[in-house]
Length: 180
Image (cartoon, rainbow, N blue to C red; front, side):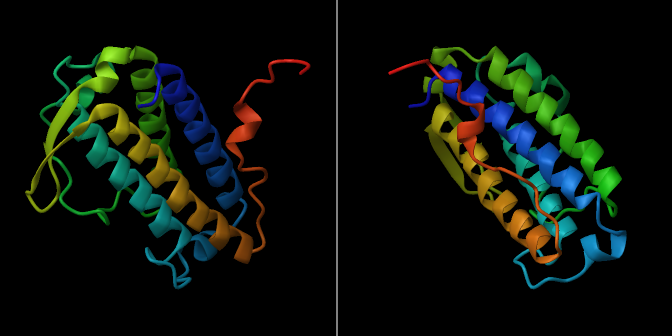
């Protein structure tokens, strides 16, 4: 089970890496961002949109947490997207605005969590209506792992287009404890 500190670190990493990917993508013309590149979600924009859709779906599920976490207040009562390809914008600036809102929500959620929250069993339904009961802390890890997986795909697409997003290692955010 992750700790609250682990979740805070992953939320910081998530926001930092998303910012780096969007900064790198912004150096390309719109045509290059929307160009079909043979990736699972087609283009750089399609891949980044999938991350926004996936995060939106998971955060809306998380809003069902028994403690009614304040960071998720804006998501309660909003219809859950039914598709992982639902469009959140047809341009990088529009999609980026949504991404930044989600990253602020994720960071606020991480800051609000208690160890008891992580142990909570969350009951939710997937996009096909199937019911699940899973540990909330593990679902948070899935959220971050899903981000890392598809951000890696976006990074590859950007590299193929001639753009480097820089260092992507979580290690860069882990503080050094001093001499051994």
